Amino acid sequence: MDTLKALVLGTYFTILTILSVYGAHRLWMLILYFRHKKEVPQAPEGSESFLPRVTVQLAIFNEVNVVERLVDAVIRMDWPKDKLEIQLLDDSTDETVHVARAVCERYELLGFDIQHIHRTDRTGFKAGALAHGLQTAKGEFVAMFDADFIPTVDFLRQAVPQFADPKVAFVQGCWDHLNRDFSLLTQVQAILLDGHFVFEHTARNRSGAFFNFSGTAGMWRVSAIADAGGWEHDTITEDADLSYRAQLKGWRGVYLKDMVVPAELPVDVNAFKSQQHRWAKGNAQVIRKLLVTIWRSDASLHTKLECWFHLSANCNYFLMVILAVLMVPCMILRAGTPAHVLLMTDGPFFLLNAVSVGLYFGVSQKELFDNRGWTSRIKYIPALMSLGIGLALNQAKALMEGFFTDDKEFKRTPKLGVDAFGMATSKRAYKVPKSLISFLEAGFAVYYFVALLAAIYLRKWASVPFLWLFFSGFSYMSLFSLMDVKLFRKLAMEELEDAEGASHFVQ
Image (cartoon, rainbow, N blue to C red; front, top):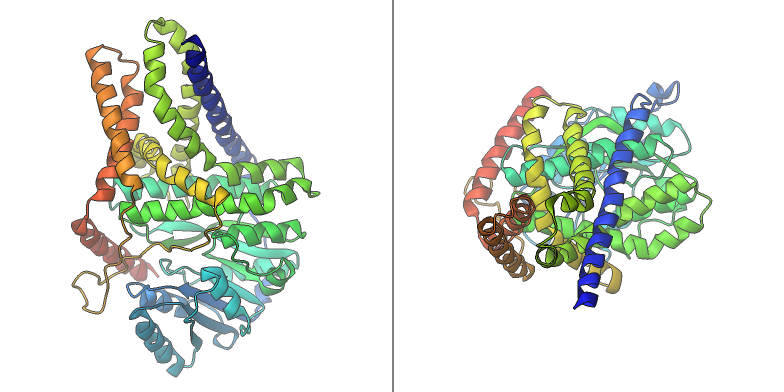
């Protein structure tokens, strides 16, 4: 019994220690960010007259809800018409094909160099589509946008001058969120992404470390893609894979924090989980493929450590699953421990993690390009912590698949767009299938509900906040994963319609 107790408590504190290391790293990111905040990337002198031919690649798959919105936004971009090529790389298997072909034909008649390139073989998924398009691309540089993004008019005017520096391989813009205010889920997603785009990209890029291309709202030098080995599809995060390979070859990237591109956030929990699953699984595959190469390279120790923290961050979800199993037994095993002892042993761990999360994501709202009303969003930080816990099983499954299977299927996140659900008969309600993992999440919710009631009954008040975080996180994920919330999707469509209309009015 003593051996089992030692094993349980030893595992518990080991996990808390590892999580605290990542908590400390979040604080380090804040320090790096504010140290380099004013070092805004500057384009070389005379770059204003640098007007190369640019190809815009739009890789889509069954995106009937948003394909017209996407192409319309690209057409409005400010760039000489004779130096702009648009490739609509369409792997669709539904009516999107007809809609995409029609919108391309319409703009071709207006004099735009636009092609609808339809593949019936999805080899390589998105990476395969991008590589296929490059075979006929005319541009020296290629801009990329996913289907849910709305490129701004001045995107190319901001991004292209950076390529006047011959060492620049890629330029990445900052993601913004059309429907941030729709629901608790979209608020949490937005804040999670804000932390990544405000602090991580900025701190890493401006401190000289590698940073990852995010797959959309960015540009590449075509010759750099070729030099790095081209688009490869042995991972499902082909963007991170290529950007690391390019930087290992001596190229560099530029992150433009103030080049903001709005996009649509998933409003459906299953779509959100599918997206997060893909990113976690893909990063695990990149670890398998590149991490040893990175550590053996001539890159600085700072760069190597940042690559490790970026790629391995999702591994914390696996630790969270173990912690979720052990937390209640540990509370039982330590039931007689004086409160001041618990405060001294557990307090620093939880304080470091809670403070780092609160500061990191809270301050990110103040540092946004448009930070109006940022203080009102701080109240969502506890929900962010809770839903992060609730996501743990989904992400742990993704990690296991990424590390131990060779499954490379790319499952895209369905987009709502505008005019869906009865607003136009040609639009489709794409949904993500429910996963069996949701039932396991429901089991954890019940487990923590019982533990929460027991803690209240026994007046273990110090345990209640932590038990509540776990209970609410697993409850939310399981409940909304198993429900078919058509009303939410309809309301989200209306929200996006209003947001898009406001965006077009401003432009």
